[in-house]
Amino acid sequence: MSTPSRLPAAHADLELGTATASYQVEGGATEDGRGPSIWDTFSARPGAIADASDGSVACDSYHRYAEDADLVAGLGVDWYRFSIAWPRVQPEGRGRVETRGLDYYDRLVDSLLERGVKPTATLYHWDLPQALEDQGGWLERGTAEAFADYAEIVHERLGDRVGLWATHNEPWCAAYLGYSAGVHAPGRQEGGAAHRAAHHLVLGHAMAAERMRAAGAHDVGIVLNLAPVWAERPEAADVADGVDAIRNRVWLAPLVDGAYDDGLLRVAPELADPELVRDGDLALMQGSADWIGINYYTPVRPDVAGTSAGDEHPEGGAYPGVAPFTLVERDPRTDIGWEIDASGLEELLVETHRRTGLPLLVMENGAACADDRVEEGRVADQDRIDYLRDHLAATEAARAAGADVRAYVVWTLLDNFEWAYGYTKTFGLVHIDPADQTRTPKASYDWLAGVARDRSRRRTSGPA
Ligand code: PNW
Image (tube, rainbow, N blue to C red; front, top):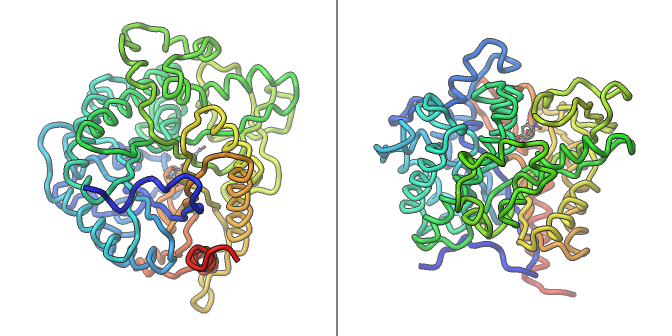
């Protein structure tokens, strides 16, 4: 059966969308049999979350999904990207399926389709069932195998209506912020062991893609937060290569070349262990993505430790195997401290297209802004509009330069649980009142709706 949500066609207009992730918006953390995830556990740890909050209520999208779907439809964009909470579907991470959890995504998908919005689902946006973490989490091969089973279960239920599937979101965060830096769940600081997590994440993707394709899926991709890596000075070239290895090559090399390159193995000798990388793993990974999703916020500028004013960075510890270095962030920056440079997105898209030859989808781009106060029923977030306008233009520029980019998706529909920052940093097109979850569209929402309107008018009237 053909589905209404396939990969956008090559050479067609860029399609637009907006995104959320399950733990960041759903709430309903104990409802309908949902099991605990590593983010429930991690959020309860003293000091882990800036405002000591968690996602147990969040935007209450578990109950307000129809209102969310109305908001997406009101934007007039093509796509809504959401993620599925594995512990809603399998509370213990394997075995028993909780039908009520699947029923929720069924309702969400139908409410999008009824409003003319195409759903795209991400299977893993970091909320691992705690039961699997208790068995070693992504350091264990069994988690990749369990992920493939879970993917097959979800695809069987939703695959008649969802045609565009992402396996993982930003496995760099899951592996390196989770198992090395310890600033994301599960909050482990185990250095090079994080490279093992990286291998198992890509393996899980490949195993899931194989099973979903066997069941008739076509457009199975993976969403990566690849980065343009710009050495601050020539002396930093070596550390910049190590950063590039962990941000970019550890993902693209197995997916595209079916091999880990020598420079990568110098940083991550764990990936030369035949107990970890078994016969057939790399062959299974090669060609396992039909498209690559790119999440871009900021460039990465490594510098030699001690030579510049580079800040102590929350990502510290996220690059095991690389000599100590600093990360420099130049002005202007968003409210979360990330440098604003839209040229980084254009460069990243052109370079990733050259490197992979695959269709690219910008699956996240957006800005944390401090001007998110509601005044007389309005939020005037001009800084966010400027950021989005410049990055949308950079995406079009990459297309004009030959990069095969098919969609641009804004992070995020709603102000939501921003991981280790809790509710202190807001990326939403829609403001949420934390007291009662009242949704108030911001000026950026009206701006994006205007862009979508102009584009669809141009599409239907044809070139002048
Ligand atoms: C991404 N870092 O997270 C995620 O995909 C979203 O869920 C998130 O809300 C968004 O970007 C904004 O942060 C990241 O520390 C979290 O480098 C942290 C980092 C990068 C991306």
